[in-house]
Image (cartoon, rainbow, N blue to C red; front, side, top):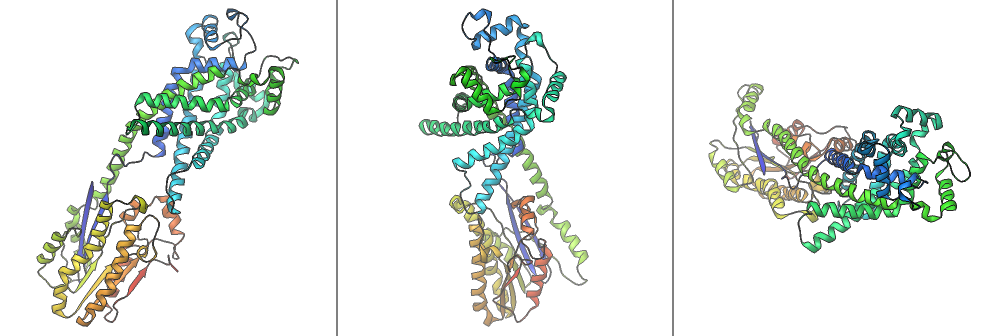
Length: 554
């Protein structure tokens, strides 16, 4: 879908411009980082509520050294621990002890992780495009970005997570309030105590990256085998669950160590108290557990952790997938509404108002008229040229559109649209008006090219080709029409601050581009208009390309 906005401002210099701004389709729209963060947070919160009893039980198993009376001489299992909590600590309510703080930690962690990951991924993809590379990230880049996002998010959520872990480890008879736990942490280690286990968390930042890698690998394999366009909800659930289980199995010792560093145990074989154990370093704790219980001690509770992760992650991604689709529709609708409001200010229906204002500003005796013409259509240009009832002495071909994208991803419809406006529109308009200039044995044609047409730019191959062709057309016509008294020149603008360029670059990129310009600012439309007036009045200049870029190219 596209909206064409045509403007004509005619005095002594005739200018016809058609600007086309492409409205992306829903399929092409990319959900921003905020959308991914919200969907991840919603999915995580709902999944956490559903599987929270498993999370509570897993924590108990990881820190427990006791055997339940109802389990005999056997070590407690997931099921026996669930039954023990239910029957001895207050029923169903006991299975959800610490849920509010855990949900808060989960929502914050998921929101920050998905926001940071998507933001960093978008930045890296744009950087790849700027360097002339494919935007898709490789395996190493994806893993590193996931780790970076995890480190950032865990820094902010570790204090809340530590409070939750201690709450989960406390039996109902040893009930502690959130404030009491906060005071305990402060008394034990001060402010740094709230980040106990953060070093282990840094290692665990590889867990989401591994999960994502396994999921994408399995997803590609399933789609390839089934020839589906997208996964079903069940497939998303199952593949996400399997991916999380695989990642958990690889990183579980650090999950176990982190929990025990936060909680500690009542006593150990050497009589260490809980506070001493909490102050142990991760390496010291590793050595002590291996010495007392063997390597298998580092995997205590792994079955429960994998079971919890299987259901938690599967449900979370299934919900996130659906919420993402809904948010994509909402964000896309908001984006289109903003773009339509911007276009409304440029709509052809406002042309009469703009022309009326122009008439009030020009000098007395000047003639101002206006027409609308889509220069990308040859028949429309022919009708426009025939409708003019006065001879044309100066023609400015200023129509231009741009669409960024790698050359390997360029499609014929996009290329055709750019060439029709930028190049063919210039040719058709010149053909339609050149005869009156020849009859007058005088005239001036000014074609707007671009510095991109002379220097090139990453992601703008089609635009550069069209504008470079305009330069070639200008030089050829200057030689051909010079003997007939007709001057033909071109202007190569740099970055001009218009609505079209605002749609191309973000504010961040605009700030970066300004630093490259010698004059320290973007050009304004009137800067180009002054160049047009100069060339229109300069009777001894032809076959030249006037660069107006503020010192961008020196």
